Amino acid sequence: MKISKFEHALLVIDLEGSQLVIDPGSYSTLPKLENVAAIVLTHLHDDHTFAPHIQSIKGQFPNAVIFGTQEVANKLEDVKVQVVYHGDRHQVGPFILDFYGDLHQVIHRSIPLVQNVGVMVNSTLYYPGDSYTIPEQSVEILACPSSAPWLRISDVIDFLDQVRPANCFSTHNALLSEQGHKLQNGRIKEVVEKHGGTFRYLAAGDSWEF
Image 1 (cartoon, rainbow, N blue to C red):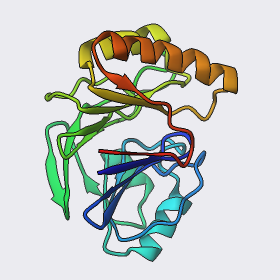
Image 2 (cartoon, rainbow, N blue to C red):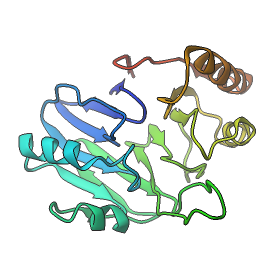
Image 3 (spheres, helix red, strand yellow):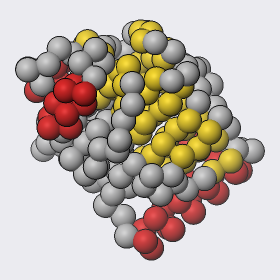
């Protein structure tokens, strides 16, 4: 499995000649893609679900299956979305997808909550979307959000203390400056290593193979 991290929340997973695209949002530039089997959209916010990107991917790969919440399906009314809920499992090509969680993390009590699902890929890579949902299995690789209007580093530390991933990299980080990356990554790295794990910072376009 090769995990490639692009701007903000966009991940591309390569496995056995197929690709899985996760959260191609408006803060990300689509890379060159090949043989996309599926797209996972954790929630409807534009920085995760950008309609022009979805249309572009579907135009290139019309057989790609899109997974998302009911709100994502409502937003992308021109394409078919397989609606998923907590506890669902689907397989597309070499990818086995387990979905966890129901709601986006609270931004503020005045802002309505939206649906959010985290995704576990092949019981190996876990990405929670905009949440601190704990998956119902151990995590070999965690894509850990490191910056957001809803994020406090104290909550990230508590999340990491519970998940205790064997490997971890930061994501959801387009809003950070160079100094912000150093600060947030340093805290994440400290907690991951405390539990015997490995942390790696992936800049946009970097990959990590397992």
